[in-house]
Image (cartoon, rainbow, N blue to C red):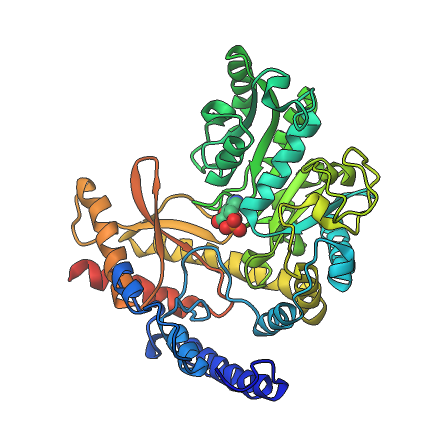
Length: 478
Ligand SMILES: Cc1ncc(COP(=O)(O)O)c(C=O)c1O
């Protein structure tokens, strides 16, 4: 170990060197086709062998960083069109560095005052963008999965009709939530964590565009009720993960209102559309939701994980978690709904929480909400354009026209029979993964296998998509 690992001058020197390397990486990544592979594919077992746990002698941290950068999935490469994780704004990554060095746990005010003040302010901003009125509030948490769990916990406590915390599931009839068959798996996982069991999510079928069919909600409610379930809420996706379909939120809100149900919107990916005046109408009805989950690390260009859970009635945010912890939250009783908002940990899964408020606030403050809205618009427009390009090409088909910036499609050229289509997509995807010229993913839709892209990198443009189509044709023919 060097003389003093806390030596500020050592930190300065290493910091400059690491930032230089990351800047070089950004240059290389933005080069696209001529640069290094998007993902230098290595099978998992081989990757684990590359990193023996030999911690006896100190390693050069710069060499380590070089190896990590080289071997990673390069989200800043415009040929990255894979899962819904953004290439973060480099300045936002620097904010993360500040946050991790200060390491203020932002669940208890005294431990992270600035970030908690910023969190309060930024939640107000997001609530206003969603169209919520006065009284809305929420929390930041570690990802969409944790966010959906947080919202569904509040739903259960508010709607069960008994004290779901105090009495547990023995307090009343088994509960259920309605959600479409395209809902992200974490909603079902949350329901299972909540003790609702396998039948806890009653699946509502979707239409040809993979959007929840509101005309089938009444039937799903009646069917769950007949099974002895008390339905407490309904989940709309805005948008869904697999195809980016936006559920008819206004109609779901009508249904929820008619039956006095909690209406939760999983806007992990698509809530950011409200930052664009032209796209916001696609989410009409979101302003009627009881709760919304919104990931900043998907379409707001922040590093992961950073998620907002916003409640139309802010007091509901105190109902997700109800443990008493006087050693942290001074002088507050668990059942007291007037608890101090500044001890955010009462309302989040995390006890020690990263400085998320600061990172999101600083990203919005330095970049501007309008610029992020324009970025979202650009990605959605490019995805619509890509759908047209694929349709016009004749040797591709799309699963459905995109509502947002996710698109599923498949290669149908090269004389492939219908029965060969699935295998062909899997083969194409695997070859592209191994060649590293692009990074795209795949999904199963109604039994068939489809290639799937999320156009989330701000530098991806039409030329990259033309090149992707050519790459697919090339590897399909090989
Ligand atoms: C609609 C939706 N909900 C929830 C999640 C889970 O979010 P996270 O990966 O931040 O936990 C995702 C992730 O892709 C998503 O698309």
